[in-house]
Each structure stands twice: as structure tokens, then as C-alpha cells.
Image (cartoon, rainbow, N blue to C red; front, side):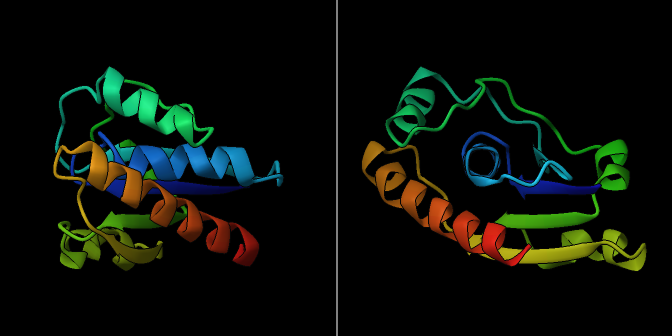
Length: 132
């Protein structure tokens, strides 16, 4: 089993989209995925969940803050966000975790930016699924 954790700042959008896209695209039952935010965020909201659905993705409204348990659980951590500094992952690296950085920009709470960013995240996940 390989556990993959997608992380962004609040777990409101980017990491949730990555998790949902991975669940949709992945066929390997030995790969498990979750998502979290470094900071406890507000719920995603109906607008974001509806926009995700337009791309065939199902996300939950609730957010998941990062925890020590999640860091321990993960074998691979994917920092989806451009506003989460790589140094935030120095401890997992010291403990042998593989950390990948995608540097996806935040959605700035606009529908227009989300509709541009969702396909970017899906493309990154497609590439990741092919490699893993």
C-alpha cells in the first residue's frame, strides 16, 4: 500500500480537487489518497463543489487540517500550492517521506480563476497517476 496526501494552504480547493481527480483517475487499489490543509480552512462552499462537479469531480464541503497522524500516514506528500513554502515539509523529508511540489496558484475566490485552475490540477494528477 502507498498512501498519498495532497496538501494546500486551507484544504478548500486545490488539494481537494487533486484528491478527487486522483480518486477518479487511479485504478490501482494499492494507492490510497487523502487531502489536508496546513491551516484549518472554512468549508469549500456550494459554489466550489458545483464547479468541481462540472469536471466530473466530487468534493466534500468540509476541510481537513493537517495533523501529525496524516503526516505519519502519508508515504508521498504532494504540495499542490504555490503559497505553501517547501520548508513546511522539512520534517516529513527527514522521516523519509517523498515530497513533491506542484506550485499551483490559489483560486482567489473567483469562478473564472477556479475554472482555469481545475484543469491544471487535473492535468498534474493525470501525469502523476501515469508515473506512479
